[in-house]
Image (tube, rainbow, N blue to C red):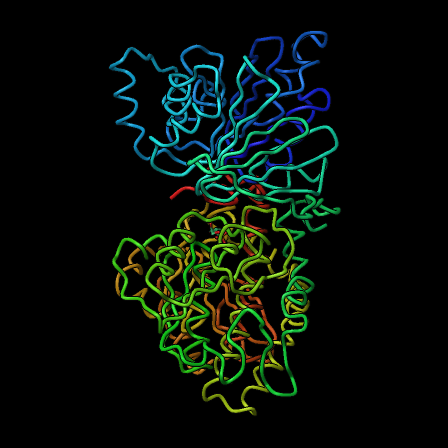
Length: 613
Ligand code: F6R
């Protein structure tokens, strides 16, 4: 999603800003821009498309001019929300005087009313964005004290923001503020930086202050002063960024997605490390309740919240919680949670599942659940992220940075850890030690099972070749494989642009089967399970209508008759099998997208972390 980088002090700003924007590219964007300040003036460059286009524009400026010398600047990659991706809508935006520049992540929800008010007082807007409203509000309040002007404007806006503000009158300082959209400050030698993602800072410093909601900070080359909107000082000290925050390289893989799929044996091993208790048939998760006296042993219901791929992990988790812990469980789209007046209270265990830890909908749901007194835990990958901090307690995924927009290793890590959570809750309740040991052993085998599935790449390529010309595809599964079917379809649609739908295998005949025509690919998950025969009948119904079946079966099982292609996963417990099955479908989606020549790591319209509602 949108990215911010800003710098004050320590030499020319341009290379720092462009380098930072490149580090943020993986998040997805459609235009970019920067503003520099010095010698009492502002200089702005913006362009549609990639950061390279902006860099070309900047390279056209004379190097002995402002571009080469000024050391204060702000820059932005924009993922369009209000207004098309045009140069006029690209950030930075300006106040009426053109002397104050603003970059902004998030959404100003009351911007229409504010814009109408500003227009009625003579403002003529240059863009369709909500950000320009904020810039103009700041400008109208600016009478020499930029921080007060920013605070005055922020008091008027509703919504989410991470902002950086630069003024021609005083290039030696940047004003930054956050509410609901991440922002961190990097403290380096003779220079202070700000970014929406620590990945943009690690080339310059590992000393990072994570701003909290409501923080406003004044940055100079050698100081960071943080206060609230009430002007009261807030103490913030830098944390050392973990080494893994450094942006990963592709390491010889054609795409980050390919690299991350192949990292999964190791990433899941890291997620499980020290957490599987094979002797007692239990798991060790310090962030959850402890032992039979643990508070979580007393919960009445689990509610798993997430969005997209993380929601699919929650849906698998629901099966695991009900089967292993005998605990009623629900998986819910996080965006829905706070708007439906949920019946949630102190007996409920709410688990927020998020790779980025910044997803606005999930964060809002966490706040709602906390307000209603539920026991809220996070299952988050990014250390120190907003959801991790809001939940306070929980479990980190430890799968390492996920750069590809299409989530892969986060999903397999999430499901593996949710299985461990279900095991822990099960053992704290009624699950026998014996059954616990069986499950613990199966979970422990996940990394080696993924290794086996990754050897299937040539089978996945063969199946992808059969699918590549189709504009539609269906994915069918039952029980815990239903969410895996949804996830397989999501992977395919987001990176290959093939219209793909996942269904419960029994559901197709209730309507969607009308869409099947000769050669429509239908991916059928028919692994070893108590309902395999029923799924096979559903596959037959599709084949009888001309569909091309790609089957996902368990090693040692007979093939699905007449299938176009086949992917085999190791034999294991049907709950645990969700992980290797998901990996097989990732391979399939990846190769369809590759054969179609799609930009796999940066699919159109998508962003890596979705920080707007
Ligand atoms: C799909 C994908 C998204 C995310 C969703 C939630 O491949 O990556 O659907 O899963 O935006 O993101 P997190 O997990 O960061 O909350």
